[in-house]
Image (cartoon, rainbow, N blue to C red; front, top):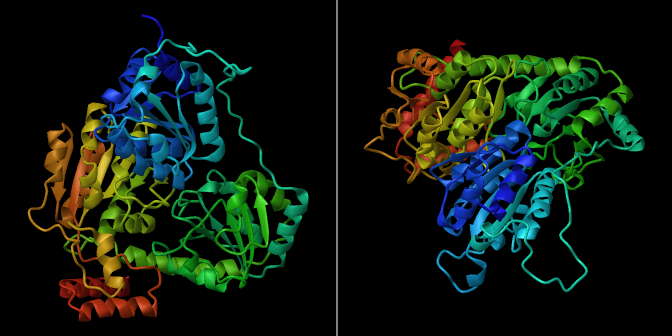
Length: 587
């Protein structure tokens, strides 16, 4: 068979080190599927049930490996389905390449069936966005797309008409009227070594050295820099606050950390932000400015590899443009050691906070407390386990009761905070790390959206462990309505309650339902020991609120207003809150 353009496309991806493409076939990409078939020795195609899941998988692959994630969808509706997962990649700065089909070039613009201008649809989500209209374009355009995705940490998009996909490879069918020829490029990307100038480093050191009460706010951009982070914290006597995306940058049992910040964070972290005079931000674009110090109250040094992000959340005295590791390596020798008083104060606060959280993990409460479920997963999981988490109340329990220690990792949709990534994330993570334990900790609402992908895990013999925190509701929205002062409405699914464990068994995996706290440890142990994909559907207390680290007067007032205005489950909620307080007092 003669070589077609799609062969060149797929072979070029392989030259970039791509070994997996996540996607769903369609008549708009049959040529590309043939290119994949002819390159099965180089690239594996992972067939999913929904294109949104393919985009989530590409995003998770990029987050976990640092290598470009690739997803594939057909023209029109297939490409539209990718969008949500691509926005997850955009907002969390994950390098992803999306490849879509397009109607044949001869009918573009004629309102042909399923004709959607996907290049226009993707204008906002992508850092590189190109329609391939000539086979001669392919090698260079693929190189530029991937290089741009790496350099700008975002989504690149290539869309290819059907006829171009199967056109003879490398052939330029047109007569050139200008002195041009397709550029000859290579599949190479070299990341720049970004280190701030000495003058800026000294300015930053002066600010940090003059501070009396310093804190560090670390995000995912500081990943891999645990040693330098803790060395900096030790010198400055500065507690380390972690963004949710940055949960794994230092262990949760580090003597320097006060945990997360924000609605899912800790009370000590909130107290710290109100107490400090100097803040060092490392690899984070923390968006929840309500939880940061008031503008002008503190001196701020911010380190970020992207110049445009320094100073976007809080007035910044010294913005340092650089890689966190290289910047800290150059900054540490300029820092002056401070006493332990400020750090010790927050170490004591964290001791009390951890005791309060442990008290809520009671095995005696029925219905099952979600905190107990999260704690059991934490206790029984391996030291190198990877947790993929959904958005919603589930993120609160994971943030507070899943502990980073040893080689553990943690992934979720941080900035988009979309529903349903937990399951597809876990599939991509298990595919990338076949020897590690991968756990999807998900809510019933998110699981139901993309539950078909459990079958994907079974087909590819991926031993993911799916734990459903099942409150039979959209829990986060329920509590958000109440905090606005409104009684809940339209957020509980009611009867009949779906049997997700039966679905898991129907897919050929392990599946069990749990409603009694005494049955939970054994069920989890059995699922974790199962050699294939396993699912544990846990009925938890639907009236357990994901309380913020510190409850403000306004929040309490609005919560009470919802009760007065007819909150339908107020007795059950009040009982649960009373049990929480009793457990903490007992602890």
